[in-house]
Image 1 (spheres, each protein chain N blue to C red):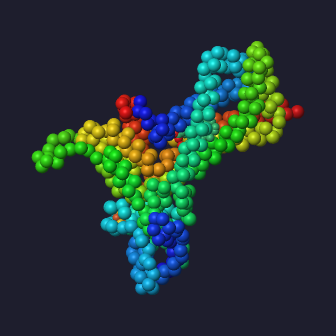
Image 2: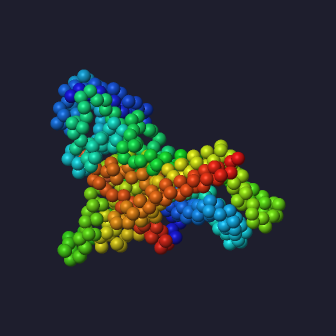
Length: 250
Length: 223
Ligand code: HEM
Ligand code: SF4
Ligand code: FES
């Protein structure tokens, strides 16, 4: 298939960027979206031009690196997939495809389509952990009984790969779905109880500091999330936050 | 209570929802009283007189309501401005309709339309009432309410604006009703679908009811 690509080019964090147009030919509909970009970059290098910088790592939907806002949607038109899992058969021969970086004040562009999602890391550092000794004499996992439904919920929350699609698609650039997943994955488990109240207070505080917007429950994040993280977790975090605020002595 | 609650995004969202719940409750009682005007002028006058002169309602609930409306409005606008700042560079191509409905994306627009209507509404009913009682000192005029209402609704332009305003209110509540439950942390596999249906019913029946009342009086008294 032959396509016209409109891609955001930006030299570095400080420069102004703009959309540039690149025609591309003979793309197999069986290739992935990132493979299509590989072909584009190969062509650009052969022409002596600067290739387009974009993030990627695992290319199998588990690392969360690949980002991209494609034709007006985070990770493109397909549902429940990352960009590396997006197939070119989702597009038609002759299509024009807009490719932009995830946009948020808290995700500044580093170069072209690459954004800095360090704000997510800082939110994690603020509370997305449990403090345990890793001395070697680790307790047997089965010594702590966990009800199956709780284990399942914790696992559902923990599937969040921190890709940032929720922020990118949210009209408010809110990080609530991500933070809710990271708060919830521990709050269901006995290991998460010790720091439970501090965790939610600190992570929300850091989220606000980073400049993400406020949730208005549009539900766009849940639709775009490649891992199907549910809005239920946001409600759960709101509950946790309210409870923790009431008893907090801070 | 932690110091950060009322300045955090989550805390403010919860306060937004609480003020929303309060307004939903107020609107329901307002509707019930207005509907009396369709059934019986006397019943409407009697209830309005009670509402207008009862000290608990006048000096406690009325200020709370006024604060509630102003808070909801001020916080709504403030949060929306913050949200706009959270994405300084916009997308060249964006399809927001692919994953969220119009109502949920335009709460600030429907909200501001309601606010504009409230301006007219205050001018029509609330300011004359306050003037009667607190400036002219007339507290005892138990038959004025129905006359006043009928007089206002004889004007087709005013009725038109009222109808339009309630369309915006319906749009606001089609998202707002269920959203407020989510904000205060209530999301349940079994009950949330019921709340969503209830919200849709509320958001359609109440505004439609207000529209009916306005048109009813217009048809019966506009000559
Ligand atoms: C005075 C003009 C008004 C303005 C400017 C306004 C604005 C807003 C805004 C910006 C939101 C937040 C949107 C969101 O979080 O999804 C909101 C939510 C809401 N509004 Fe209003 N609104 C107004 C009047 C009303 C009225 C009269 C009612 C009810 C009768 C109402 C009920 C609600 C409810 C229930 C919510 C949901 C709260 C939540 O999502 O947690 N609003 N409003
Ligand atoms: S919640 Fe979903 S969309 Fe958001 S960062 Fe996690 S995996 Fe990505
Ligand atoms: S490259 Fe790892 S999820 Fe796409």
